Image (cartoon, rainbow, N blue to C red):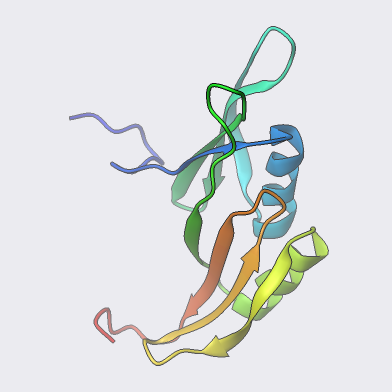
Length: 130
């Protein structure tokens, strides 16, 4: 089985209204980096690949055939508090303040402009089973 570099066996694929704006949000809020794009003849995003460190997600413009999707994503970052601030400044709605969790993460939560939930976490322990 071949999986392209930067992708996982399961790769999140989000259909978003105003996909171009959504891509810009992901760049500003979470430091995503666009690595590939294809467009429809009218210039809308058919598929945009965004890299988050070692993980890639895909975004497409929602349509009648493929309506906007909602997902919950868990994002590990170097600084949960700073990333939460960046996300809110970029247009996300805070749904949970960052706090130390009993399972070893410092985690907060935001809802992005497309309605997806992002759990923003910094791992506080090296124990994978904490």
